[in-house]
Amino acid sequence: AQSVAQPEDQVNVAEGNPLTVKCTYSVSGNPYLFWYVQYPNRGLQFLLKYITGDNLVKGSYGFEAEFNKSQTSFHLKKPSALVSDSALYFCAVRDRGGYQKVTFGTGTKLQVIP
Amino acid sequence: EADIYQTPRYLVIGTGKKITLECSQTMGHDKMYWYQQDPGMELHLIHYSYGVNSTEKGDLSSESTVSRIRTEHFPLTLESARPSHTSQYLCASSEWGGQSYNEQFFGPGTRLTVL
View 1: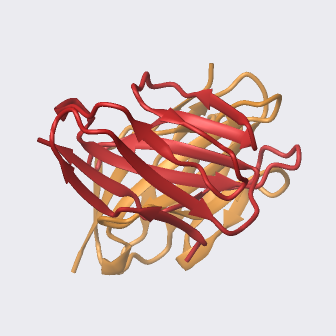
View 2: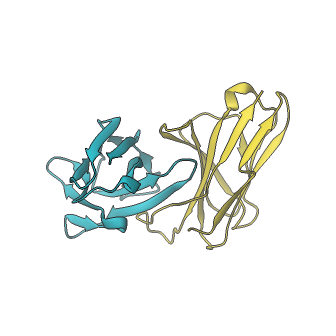
């Protein structure tokens, strides 16, 4: 069975500082990994994904994520946080084989403080 | 904005009523999903579909049912609503084509309150 862990329920960061939202995963084979963002009273929006190749993936709104196979992690990062980045962030994983469903993490609330 | 629509956005009904939550997408996606999410909490997959006439139950047991008669339409029905069904329901779709790395596009959600 595949699983995703987001160890922090909430992350607080000052505007202009770098931010990191953590994600670790467990799958039986090589993973596809995703990050989504959810603003209040909205559905989720896709940010970025890792399929293969370069371990550093760049996505929307200046976000990037680093795939680390040895640590089974896919942390979301941004060099300089904006107040508008405050939202709920979800990591998701899918095994490459068969018809596996996507498994979402429990979400991390990011609060950027002005 | 993704071309996936949900109606109604908000619904307040009494116990025992039958309701249908609508979801439509104009992207021609094969795969569609329904998730249940309490506010600010994790998503729970309740139903999914790989295409017309294909529906499967998800990870979370649900008293709802779904149908997929047309590619673009994936309605969810509750035959008899109860207060425990109060939640937000998110619909999503993705391309299939044999590839499982395609991201999902989400609708804005339906917030359901059962009194």
